[in-house]
Length: 75
Image (cartoon, rainbow, N blue to C red; front, side, top):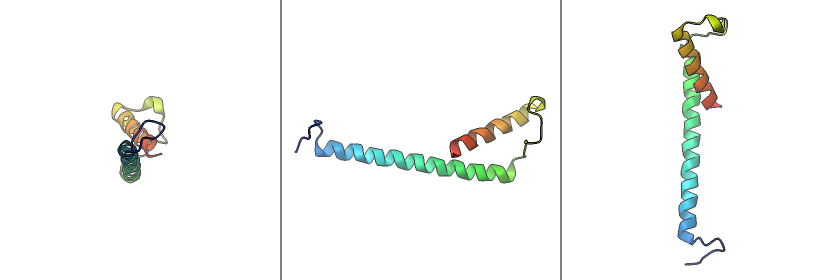
């Protein structure tokens, strides 16, 4: 087995490369999931843009927080 200057063999480099590819795929799929949720929220959830934030009820605050969380993760 050829040892590189970093002390890693060919097998180790291959494993690290495969793990990096898997991590990239997981991040890419997560972004698509949240983009789909954001589109669904836009179609189904009520818009709270015209309301005063200090006068929102508890369930409206929860909806607003959920929409913020989905939007933040979709970007």
